[in-house]
Amino acid sequence: MTYQELTEQIQKRKSFLCIGLDTDPCNIPPHLLAEDDPVYAFNKAIVEATHDLVIAYKPNLAFYESQGAKGWQSFEKTVRYIRSCDPSVLIIADAKRGDIGNTSRHYAKAFFETMDCDAVTVAPYMGEDSITPFLSYPGKWIIVLAVTSNKGANDFQFFADPADKRLFELVLERTKAWATKENLMFVAGATRPAMLADIRRIVPDHFLLVPGVGAQGGSLEEVVRYGMNAHCGLIINSSRGIIYASKGEDFALKAREAASQIQQEMARMLQNE
Amino acid sequence: MTYQELTEQIQKRKSFLCIGLDTDPCNIPPHLLAEDDPVYAFNKAIVEATHDLVIAYKPNLAFYESQGAKGWQSFEKTVRYIRSCDPSVLIIADAKRGDIGNTSRHYAKAFFETMDCDAVTVAPYMGEDSITPFLSYPGKWIIVLAVTSNKGANDFQFFADPADKRLFELVLERTKAWATKENLMFVAGATRPAMLADIRRIVPDHFLLVPGVGAQGGSLEEVVRYGMNAHCGLIINSSRGIIYASKGEDFALKAREAASQIQQEMARMLQNE
Image (tube, rainbow over all chains, first blue to last red; front, side, top):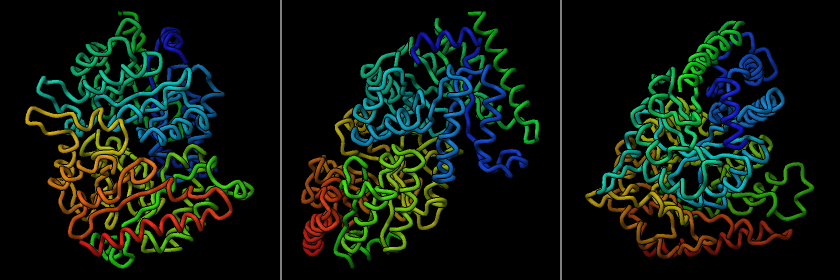
């Protein structure tokens, strides 16, 4: 999917919402546990009920890997289902990968060829050759960690040089030189909205994937104030607040209601811009 | 496995060699491709032929994930086979994971419960809560990236503050405060051996996992000169140089010969200390 196509989807759907599929077998409605693949059954129902309200889904690999190979099967089936249900939705593998070039090439193959995801999150610590192997797939995206939404972001991401440049700023500067706004986005946590202004000074045009709205405490309004650009430029993720809105048999309906509430706020915000 | 047990294995086996199972279906001997699971058949033969010469195996997750769920099955079977073949060998999942606390808990579950690996490599960018969930498993280890063996290590790992402290040094200082030498190791690339001396000033006692000897150009002798401590404190990885020593039907024998050559050098080095 190109930058232009993604921007058009945002305008068409009046939404820049991404639903995080952090599907934990311990948290899904009990009646699904009788299914052959409860995680897939859950994801399928969530996607079926919400896809017109979102521009992206973000399966979080940890939740699948904790079930071993069986979990990877649930992940594969989920990706295929999203693709068949709504081909215009972006599928983001939230995997935080990154390794030496020869190894990153295999991660790129995993998520872009074997799995047909549209985007993968990448950790920047290992530098250029850990990132560039993901860039050789036309229409695919990498999403590099800049400022994350967790408390631990304070430990290393704000480490600063004598000119007061912080690590996340160096990551933004260097990484944007290796790619373009057509294949590179950044993770920018919603829990530090004022930091979004600092990020926008370096990457005014790139898309930002913003986790941390909802369960982690980030505010949608603040994120839009500091992070939105003329093309929107935001993909805002919510996971637990939507997918676990109910643990009853009405979970998909309640997920739709929770997603719809956010989408309606987003529609207003897009109109006001 | 405890620090003491690992040290004893090094003395007993006269080796601190780790074989990296970077098993690429495109690189394994053609006669194995007729097998039901060629990657597993290859790994099994390599482990069978070499386990008395090593203290660890390090399956590199990217090579398994590039085959999707099927690859994760090969990974699961490989871990089980190593465990049954030689229970005293350390199994390192080279996965470079790391995410917010709630997600890292699921990665820890994946590698320490579902998979029964002994250690997992972790990327430090997201800080404390991305790392500590891996520490609640007695006898299990995390191996945090400090200085990696690739060219891209230059991009961010040596970024320095006004006191000339470099990012990898901050990673070492902070991370060692969250754990102990009984559950924490660091990745320290063999391609910058002099950097090992800087690392040893901060973590004199911790084990270092050293990739980059062999195909990537690092020298075993240099690594030992700068990195070895009184308990050895080194796990040196070689992947391609051993597992792809031959692409013929004699691949396991040739892998043993390549591993044996390194092990004999290591035995001399342990004796000289």
